[in-house]
Image (cartoon, rainbow, N blue to C red; front, top):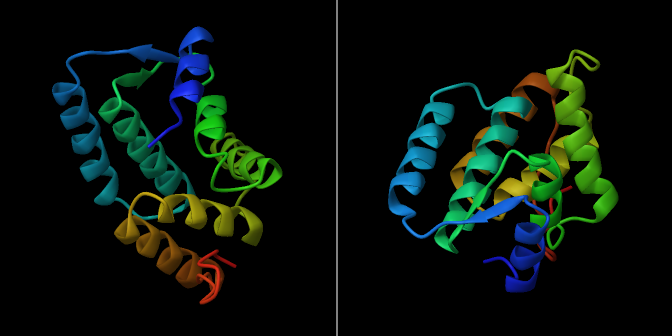
Length: 150
């Protein structure tokens, strides 16, 4: 659940829109998430899954993402889960991969994305962690003491 003050600020910035009838929109996001789950759990796909989870969570609170700075909205919504520099790195890695500036994510970006996914869905987290291990040999697991991925 997101802080009501944050939601109000994002709405004032035009990054969120208040919506009343959310069920159809939630169903659309869930269908999109189901399509993403049929694809490989690579970094870009897993990032898109995270976006769907955040969108669904926002809709459940009566808000929809707009096209105004959606990745900055993600950054603000996830600030409780990761430090700002780690969040920015996750987003910058997505940008680099999507636009061909990078060929693969680094370990820090993978750990950050796993930590964010973990806040929303264990199976999506597991799919991404397994993909990162199989593809890059990364071992990403939560600390037994803190639950934070490393």
